[in-house]
Image 1 (tube, rainbow, N blue to C red):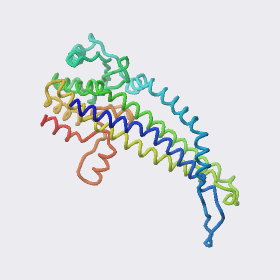
Image 2: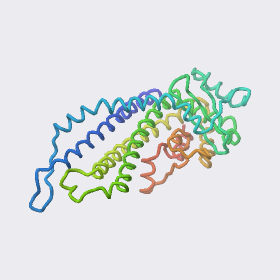
Image 3: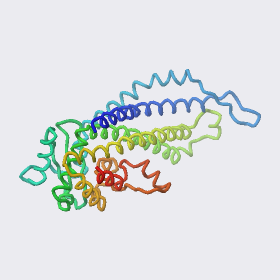
Image 4: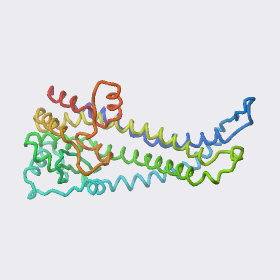
Length: 330
């Protein structure tokens, strides 16, 4: 198990390094596209413009904007990264749980952490009838296990220990830190793409009357530049989604194995997953970025069809049925 964790950690680091590369690649592609469509050496016999790419000019411009892009993303990332705990707690309306509030849950978490020799994380509870649990945080000061009242009401002690063991394994394996990092990067690219789309829309709505009829001969229009930006941002967003989902799926299997080992009862965790799969999620929280951390994603689909294949490719979690099958064979 430890060798698999090390292997997954190495692969995850390589995947995580791809986020900045994807972002910078999208910036270069955007500048190259503008350069290509903005440079014309005339028209061919059919009236089409003969465009060409000035790679030296693109590279020169890219190196000039590189510090601004890296600096802006670094500041954005730092703010989101270090404020994630309060943002998540506020989004799900979680409240800290003390031993006196619910000795049953607190004692289960405490016993499991003592068994594996890890510090006691913060335990939060959400007043919600649906079944859910997730781990969050980036260090020992912010590591948190959050559970819903619905989960506590409908799981027995063995099943609850399996679920909490699963979440503690995410913390032990540093999965929460990695997932939050990837969520921040995807959020940055998603926001940039949204801004570009809105600018494009506003240009079509308010700029159409100001476009002159001879704009074609004066280089690129703002609309074309925006379209190029949308295409580049969409490509970057697509690949960052695939990367993040691959990271999350691999680590769910490891968390199941670790949770089963920690609680000493794989069948209890399998039983808990069956119950949770019937009503997963948080009732009033519709944010997919937070749902990536749930023990079962509410919109997770499975199946052997083409639709099922694409669903699994874009899913942050593996099939619940597959997870249960593996636990029962543990």
